[in-house]
Length: 149
Image (cartoon, rainbow, N blue to C red; front, top):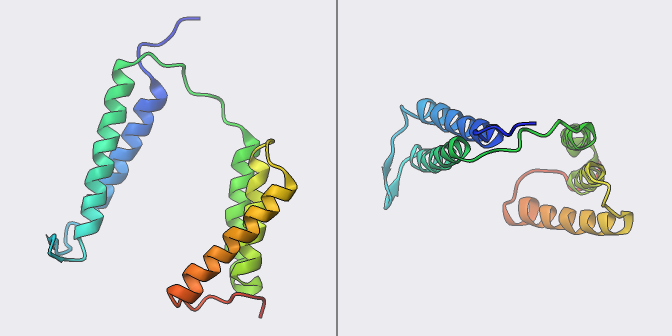
């Protein structure tokens, strides 16, 4: 088996970042930029897009000059666990409240790896849920229900 002279995984990741950054720059082209002391609505999106583009160019360049191992095959378990976690949170956050929906999402996401332990996962889910409630509902004042209606 011969090794490629190109690290395809880094190259594709870098090109993806460059494409996202380019899309962001195009989408925000009509927004007022301003300057650091008086930021307009287009200032931060462009700063983040330019940083993202720099990372993308770095990874693309590294992918071109470094021998790669090739792209690993897609594993269904992590993919399905994370998709299910996001989907369950989106479908239950309003009905069950932020506290229960975020606990359910973390527990589902823990199935992405075989290394998770139930007691640790539940403890982490409860702490993360409490932090989410504290941040989004109490500190930021967002109108998100905490418990089921």
